[in-house]
Image 1: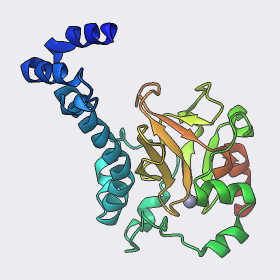
Image 2: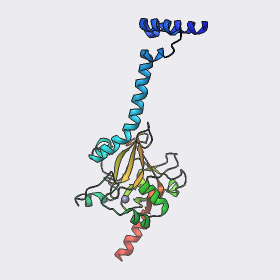
Image 3: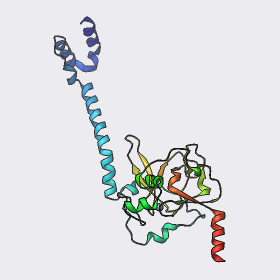
Image 4: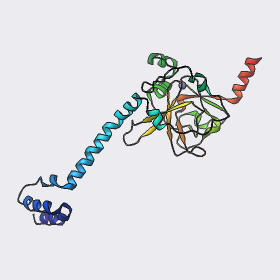
Length: 246
Ligand SMILES: [Zn+2]
């Protein structure tokens, strides 16, 4: 008890005069006195606030998606349109189809049953269920030929090889998508680690995430699942075009 009293007296300046007076009273037996201290109240308020944020973030995402603000809020400014590669988006942008970000439905849309039929199980899990492939498992980590990476869901061109770089993460990484090829959506699925999800704009399939620790000229790192893409080498594309023309 002597030691306890000593501890209390050393704490008095923290709690002020009223706290000190109560502390004397508390030494007689009452032990719930700390609840009245400003310090305790501050801690309780902070804890409640943190809990509120944890609950509110997923709700906020849904609300933002609902009113169509999410994409506007986080869209990352892109550099001038790349001269390389085609732009599949501009042709269909005027088609008038409203992209439903919340339900992951783009201009190209199928029922979940149809998606399951069209995609391999791994492609389905990544593109439609937001799964992440295990790192270093995609052969695209080692792809270096000139060409274009297309969406495995709808075939839309997404990234040119000229924007690919080795990030060392184990996932195919790019510093820039093709113009108007992707949609970027806030992702709060990991509490306290807000991220930006990258989707194929045309079918809203999940591709990966974008981070701001990439190389110049954009400073962005598009961290992609190889399973969400197919690769079309330039040579093959040119040969196919020649065959078609002959
Ligand atoms: Zn797609």
